[in-house]
Image (cartoon, rainbow, N blue to C red; front, side, top):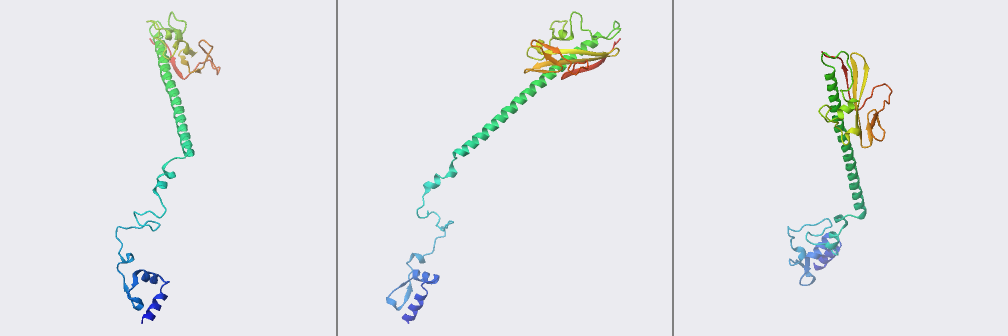
Length: 239
């Protein structure tokens, strides 16, 4: 019986079951029989704590020939010179954009402040004009400046008790701000008070800079000076 059994086992040698039997069975007492050998590591049950990775390696054990050092110094832990250059370029572009936006916002804030001051100055002139055209002594409406002043601009820039309290737009309001009165009609009188000013080397309104001061400049030729701050009203004698 030993011969057929041995032949049968040799025939199974190249099969998976045969390889398992060769690993788990060990001959004892010659070729007359086989008995299980329980001391072989292949027969010992694996611990439930052992796991296998993607490549079939057990958890806690590195594959043969592997090392931790290449993984710690891999490309994923740092930046290349190209990546740093691109990042710096994006940061620089963002800073330039923010500075440009800040500069534009500063210009808008300055213009808004000057426009508010100019409207206040034009309103002061108009209020003084209404006072002059009130009372029983007023027979015909007029836009003549108060006594002692050559123009409404001179009255507005005067800071004495008889003046308008001074111009508002800074810096150098006496030269960088000009108020011009335009009239049309008779009674009622159409009066337009326009304020021109110069800011950051720019002149706003129908005025021009002659190198020393602002002067009126009727660019559209309609006989009425206008500007960003313009107040128009009808004036008549109020008794």
